[in-house]
Length: 372
Length: 128
Image (cartoon, rainbow over all chains, first blue to last red; front, side):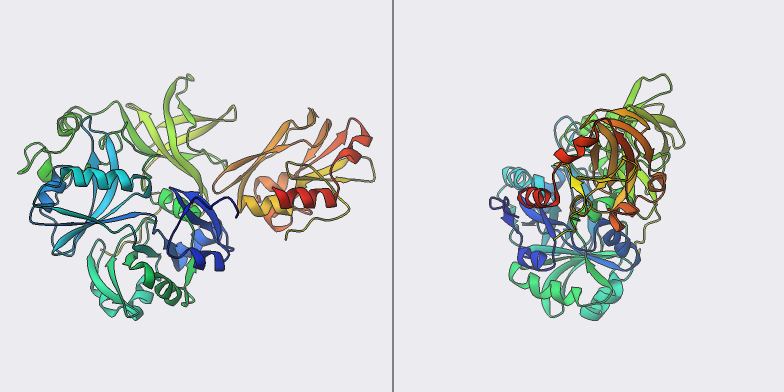
């Protein structure tokens, strides 16, 4: 490609090009959207064996200091103080109106908290953290580090060879591990609905580690294209599409990320931006909800498509949609107004002037492979 | 480099056109086009009937995105490749053969000559 000179390069840039990746601009980086295998086969391979994803564009941040958990709780909906050493949790940064500023993973890494935030939000998130870090908290960005995700049913056997202690980890465990002799920080989690690991590694070690992982017959490199179809089938939200500052955790059907202790009546209730709004919505309900959608037929129903009731009245909008290679049919998610959120509700999607019947469906669209 | 057969004509929107013995033309998308689109998962086939040159007549969708297919000529669409409804991957596997999209009778048979030849399309595809 000739037009990506202004884009930032991930540490594995040269490896991606060597592997024949199609590089595209994403969140300011040149990123591999697919490899010669193609999106469909990369997706299916991840579900059947294992895919190696480079997600080094995502923001890694460490918080040090005795007040780190308390400070993070003042900005998020999660139970951070109660997160045990070696455990990871999904949580949300909110704003004063209860809107979602970002969704992210946080680990208790013992002497610090380790966060992985979205690429497009990472500069804002870092500034947000620094603005709220008092004397008792030190915020250190680790944006220079690489992040690899090994995902799929064969991920565990590959990791067991390169890092035997990984066998002791279950879903959402986190620990420092040597992987193929390379010092890493590893979590048993991901963004595909499969069992797998995310591996944080120093930029200079990333190429060595990636090549060791790719040497396994079970492992194929997988790009961002398949990452998107995998997470969609798994019913996982994409920030900036399925939720943003105009949607609250309750509207986004992410109230499970509002920890019990942070809810009204909990031991550390409220105390984060928009807590009053979110508490009210937990009590009174909301006017719209994010739901899973199954369109009839083969035509994908994509982001931005309007959803209508039987009278042609707009009742919602698709926020993510495409063809699910493992489902073998189109899948989508979006927001519908109250009254249409129940599983089995029928709406119509307008695609190129034609009405496609759509049924509100359970997510995930496939049974996840997490090892709990 | 993708396959660009010399006996076909081409458009700047990456359709190929083959003139048949009976004066009708067969239309599909080029190898270059299917390669950049990636794995196709859905084809909205054209309806038979009259169309203008460059009218949107069909849509092909990959896992990631939808792309319009334009009529290379004015005329009448006579037939669509119904197999693509269940097997959109035929376009990826055999873009100039079993992955053809539709047949049409051009309003002006000479209009085909004005389309790009293989050399011109090769140059166009390389520059794009």
